[in-house]
Amino acid sequence: MAITKIHPIKSSLKKAIAYVVAGGKTDEGFLVTSFACTPETADLEFSFTLSHCMPKGNNLAFHLIQSFKPDEIDPETAHKIGIELANGFLKDEYEYVLSTHVDKDHIHNHLIFCAANFLDHRKFVSNRRSYYQIRKISDRLCQDFGLSVVIPGEENGKTYKEYLAHQTGTSWKTDLRRAIRQAHNHSQTYEEFLLRLTVSGFETKQNQGILFRKIGQQRFVKGETLGLPYTLEQIKKNFLQKQTLENKSKTSEFLPSLIDIDANLKAMRNKGYAQSLEIKNLKAMSKSLLFLEEQGIYTVGSLDNKLREVKDEFEATRKEIKKLEDKISELSEIAKHIRTIKEITRNSETHMANLPQSEQIILRSSIKALKEEGIGPFSLDVQTVQKDLQDLIDKKRQLYIRYREVKVFLRQIRTARSNLNCLYSPSQNLEVDKQ
Image (spheres, rainbow, N blue to C red):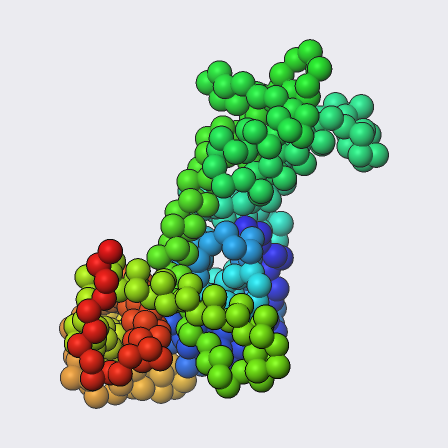
């Protein structure tokens, strides 16, 4: 995981937000979360907050990018980490829009947050100190989830001789770190990792941690002295995470579809190629039958019933997510209007006449918006509304996990049914061989 430098946004805020929430990049908007605003009107809501600030600087917002190592994390977990990062350093004081992009070879988060908070309207100070505070939170989250992390102090403690050796590429510790990384990247288990390391010319032993040394060298070096990624705890945590992702990918594997050999021009001209396609079709059919057996499906009738059942669940889940999104958007707007009224009137309507005209216009607008929803301007507490909003966001996140699972299963069922159609008439009551 890596955090790039935070970039200020001085103009075209609406375009920047539109880019990070684009449906094609965020799985049609499922990987978008906002706080104290809605993505569609975030630029206007940022401007309202900024209108209360002292004229200091021309930053409208800040844009942070959080990247992950390819094939190391799934989109939902990346999005969860992004939310925890945003909440960790913004402390529920800044409006933000967070999105997870899945259109590149590496998953990455985009976070755009207002340049001022909505509590006391102070500007966010972006400097070296704030950057490293964010980096510290990000690294902690990375460790919690067993992900790769770039640690600035990873190689602290070198002697000047080691430093020069590292610069020229002759340090044995540099070679050791490289060998550990390579063995880790090409291994599926901890035991395989130790074997690959031995083949590379290094040996290990465990004694309240892990120790390494080059074969033939006199002394071992502790993994913790090489940096956090080389400790026994972190190495084993990485393999646990890798195994979890591998198991998840296996359960999400799509069934292969049968190939229409008769319509394949290359197969018509090349008998060898046609035979290879026949073998592929046999393997695809075998996987389909095995999948159906695992699901307890032995007839075409039960397969069609299961297909209808899964389709119904898929549509119901998608509709429920859409309802939650509408509720989240509505409640976010309500919370913002309540907060605005509280800021301007300090929860007392008697000060209306003494307010500046600009604030009176904003106040009337917020009161009108709440009344249109049937809500009394002073009848709700913003903290209560915010808690209800977070509950809805958490519910949506959990429902979306189920949505993706059902989506994969539906595709598997459809593929199995299509494969059977290539061999049998849909009207037949096919009995699948249980052996």
